[in-house]
Image (cartoon, rainbow, N blue to C red; front, side):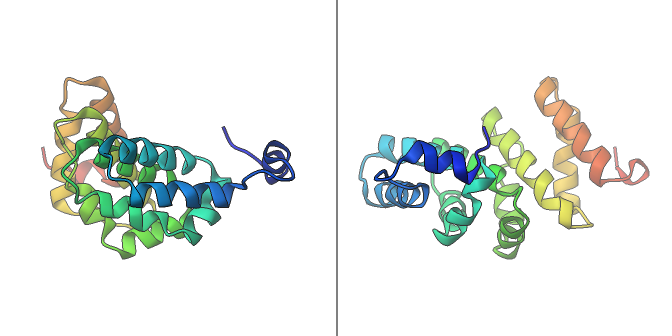
Length: 176
């Protein structure tokens, strides 16, 4: 649910921990814990905060995009899943979108297309959908993978693949 600054101040109270400080504490917890389960839970919380545009400025100040992108090189599928979720959520912000692209994020994210875990696969394609809003050309290797989504028997994958192709690739250019 989206929030307004006035609502956050009212919820936080005069002496409470503000949103920026809370996000900072989550990031500190994520970077200092040795527990994989705590890392997963904390990253999932950070990804959820990336859903609300009121948090974008705080997340930019705290370099959260960098943290999400760094998790894409981990071996743990849950960390990858939550990192992609966070990138997907925050990529709606134009500045974050351009920052992700400037860090070669399209390449990193596209490696998770057609991942065996459905949620990872869906998050990767949805994030790329947002990122390509500012790019004119979808690389052939990504196009070929998205065509496979469209051919999937899984309705979620099929529908997302179809929307992606209809949005970014003219039908006469799709090689079937």
